[in-house]
Amino acid sequence: MIAGALWFLLGLGALIAGAELMVRGASRLALLFGISPLVVGLTVVSFGTSAPELAVSVQSAWAGQVDIAIGNVVGSNIFNVLVILGLSALVVPLVVHQQLIRQEVPIMIGVSLLLWGLAADGGIGRGEGLLFVGLLIGYTVLLIWQSRRAAAEEKSEYDEAFGDGQPGWRNHWALQLLLIVVGLVLLVLGARWLVEAAVGFARYLGVSELVIGLTIVAAGTSLPEVATSVMAALRGERDIAVGNAVGSNIFNILCVLGISAIVAPAELTVAPQILGSDLPIMVGVALICLPVFFIGGVISRGEGALLLGLYIAYTAYLILQAVGHPALVAYAEIMGVVVLPVVAVVLVVLAWRYWRVSAAR
Image 1 (cartoon, helix red, strand yellow):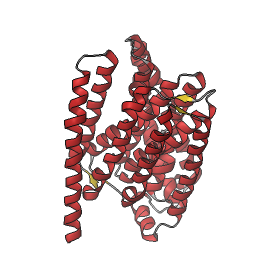
Image 2: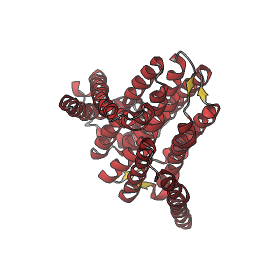
Image 3: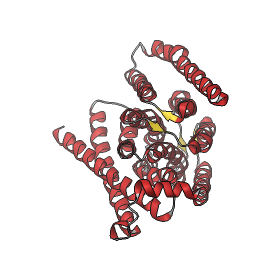
């Protein structure tokens, strides 16, 4: 148990160091190649910090641990929005780029609904995996094309914010790429040590593989996104902070689950619990981003606290379900009939009022 705690702390330290290197390298690399920080957050950073999810899910799918493979993706997507954006917004209110509201969030919602629909028959096969990977390639090409067409003033603004404008070895692309690679290595190692320690604790307590995948593994493999987004928020690079979370969700479904389905010896079987509760919750979490992002174009500290509160409620539901507590039915009814509808109505009304005020100006 003591050794597990030491590996946990060592993993946490590697995550923090890796996140700092990743943000530094990715930010300056974007400047050097004229790519907007939002696109860097949606591609380089989000894909890179999702490497632990990819490694864990592919390895689990190959080994036949399907519940961990799928639970990791679904749980990570829920965690990314509710915890990562929640924590980052508590650190500093996050300004939301209009492209996220117009394009990325709808894409995230679309691929979430696609996953739910394809999994409805109880499995995800190699054909669905190839479809996901093909969509990822198309999405990445679209982002790069859009970034190259970005307005000159946006690039100038970015140069003023993140570059010193002086030539030298510190600005060389190879150094920035090295920082990203070293950061990625630390992120992957840190996540691996953390997850192994956490899974050991969970199995010691007799928790099922599905619950491990939805909670411990999902949270552990999402810690690079947590560290990177919070670090980016502290450094004022809010486009990377928000884009990282949204981009990671798209990446998790299209790449992580896509490759897992391709390499798996057999079709990935989707557990009834995931179909009945966790996938709908994942889609609902994606949908909640629209009003939260739209209101004022900022994720405020209050909205960040709301997102964190929803994740605590979801975790409580999983714990009650795992132990078979008699209060589970009443808890689920209260959350489904009262709490969640009230939250949804309040957010929609606030978004509508903000739109009315903005239109009147």
